[in-house]
Image (cartoon, rainbow, N blue to C red; front, side, top):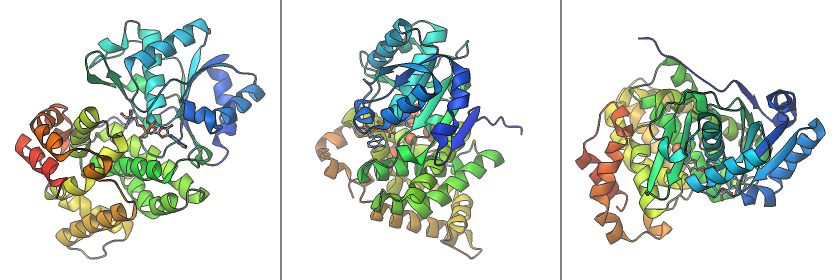
Length: 383
Ligand SMILES: NC(=O)c1ccc[n+]([C@@H]2O[C@H](COP(=O)([O-])OP(=O)(O)OC[C@H]3O[C@@H](n4cnc5c(N)ncnc54)[C@H](O)[C@@H]3O)[C@@H](O)[C@H]2O)c1
Ligand SMILES: [Fe+2]
């Protein structure tokens, strides 16, 4: 069977990546809309970008109203500033939230209408050039064809997926992740690990996507504990930034599966950040994934050096054990730690299992789960 593989047009990675990207940016246009959040301004990350833009003679306007759950209102505000300012390309700097917002702004700029009508829609027109500068090593949005925006009027999350949403340029410079606090580093790092494991064990995986999944899993096991324990370690930050981009490439091509499918309803109902809800679920979902993907987990165990033999069951067990050890080092919050009430959670399990299965992601597992199996995994979060 043939497979299409796609990546952003340019990926510039490593220390100094932003500076090296300026020649590309000059070709994208004369005035950029910078899409970001207030924290990025406060931490000086936007200042680092605007210094480079000033040096390159590129004008800019700034929209900094994005918070950790991008909404259709933020997209509309960004579009207004883009049009009023006469901008001709977009630069997103921040975590997945500003990057997804910039993609949605770009989609509406050239395709018209309202972002709320974009669920499941294919985009007819190319977007203005988008530069994506991640400041978390997590979502991989800089390398994916996905944008997730909350339509707060209807209380739903719009999942827009189209190859035209790929950034023109991803700038993966570890300097921007250095300021991420330990909990953000842990949660977003495990989000990237979920992208890598789910895409590797997905029934849509193919040799090219698996290369990226595998490379990301290895880097995350090698470097996430250090990035978490010592955020000033540049090597760990660089390797994690690259791993997140690799994992983004992998899942953008081969999809995510049961963890992300179950994670979205927890995020929607209990406002748990995306990375954290995935991190909570990894431990309870991995034994389930193992049942359908023993060989794949055995291969990953060999890749990370957790198993050297040739027994697939033992190897898969070793990978599950190594993942649990990693999670323990990262002090991932449980639903109770996060402040969720157990009775309220249990009252929502039927809905979450229904919505989670309905998202389509669990169907990408080699062993497609039933609604009852999702319910059991939601319950196991409290064991
Ligand atoms: N498009 C995709 O492919 C894709 C994939 C997964 C998730 N997502 C989306 O991404 C969003 C989550 O993104 P995220 O996990 O990167 O978090 P985020 O962008 O929501 O940021 C989380 C918090 O961390 C802060 N932060 C970010 N970088 C920092 C830094 N370097 N230093 C200090 N603080 C920093 C932000 O200010 C914010 O308060 C969700 O909306 C999710 O739906 C998109
Ligand atoms: Fe994710």
